Every structure is written in C-alpha cells, then in structure tokens.
Image (tube, rainbow, N blue to C red):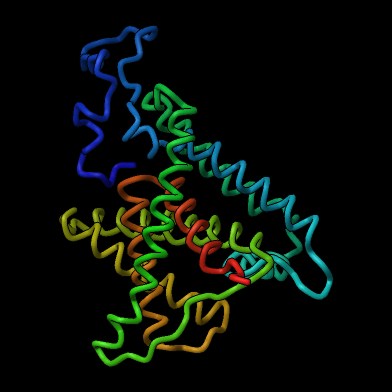
Length: 267
C-alpha cells in the first residue's frame, strides 16, 4: 500500500467533510484517517471480503464439480499443492488459509485507514473488475495485429473450457503470488537497495511480469511461443499496474473476468 507516490494523501481520496487528523492529536475516539472510495478500494479490508467470497465459491465449486479423471485445480495453485504434498502432506486448507491470513494481516496493519463506506468499496471492486477485465480482453483481441507487424507468429492465449471454475482459482493464486508477493516484495527490495522509486516500480513490474509469463511454460509446461510469452508479459504488466493503482481486489477480479471471457465456449 506504500507504493503509490503518496497519492492517498490527496484530498480526493478522503471524505470531503472530514479533515485529516492533526499530527499532535492523541484523541483515541476521533478517527480522521478513514479514506474515501478511490483509496478505499485499494485497502485490504474490502479486498479481504471479496477474495474470501471468491475463495469460498471456488472451493465449493471444485468440491461439487471435480471428477477423478479431470482435476479442476490448475496453474500455480496445482504446483503449490503438489509441492506441499511432497513436503509432508499439509492439509488442503492451508493455501486458502494463507491467502486469507495475509489479507487479514494487511487489514489490521492499515486498520486506521480503512474505507468509510465498506460495501460501496466492495461493490466498486466488482464493477471495476468487470470493466478492467473486459478492457484487457479487448486489448488481447488486437494483439495479433501488432505481432504480425513485428514479424512474430501469432497464437492463442487460452481457449474455450467448459470448466470455468478453474479460472477462478487461477486468477486468485496468480495475482497473490505474482503481484501481492512478487511485485510488492521486489519493489520493496529495490527500494531497500536505494533504487529510486521512479525506477524501482517499473523494474519490479517488468521482472514480476516476466516471471509470471515464464511460470506458464515451466509450471504448466506450455510450449514456448514468443508471441504467447510476450502477450503474457503484457497481461502481467497490465495486472501489475492495476494492483499498484487499484489494489489487489481489482487485479484479481480483472484477471478472473479476462480468463472466463476468453475461456467461455462460443457454441
């Protein structure tokens, strides 16, 4: 939450009727730090609610729809579960518990800055997710034209899949791993190494997006196609910018919307 050039301090991110708490104030009963909608959507508190509901829907859907011949878990989550099983048979609930725990810690850490209108922010996350997910889908539709101009062979990223519940988990786990942990940790590491913020943020975005794209080839063992790799890097950059500006909840929602729209059978 500290990677935003202090934009949360701007007046339009705070309720118009409430001044900021004076630095010398020690009144525990007066809360001047509650944020308005734009910054509130980025807070961990509404994100915790949205992600918990998505995780619950995902786990229920997997439990009801899975078959022995066709597992519904995929991507980084499947790799993590296999790694945990090899490491000593951890209970299946450990991964969603870790995600909820991370968001809960972030919520408590920034509790004084929680949004004033919680459910407005939750609803806003849903609307923004649909908007930015459809924008990403539209951009990717036009990507082959760009690749043709630079001489790259075009190939589809994803495709029709009747088991759409899988993409709910993919969006959640990939955004947590590559944005909440990967991008944010790398940006913090670069800032600790005294890299200027104006350079650290783009560097963290590019590196985490490249790792995100490579993971599809190593974790999911997809064949390496330059145009597909570049498309995934651009998708990763798009989600990293969303995470930086609009928060984890919107980044997850946009990723899920994009995956579902791409994978929805057309006939």
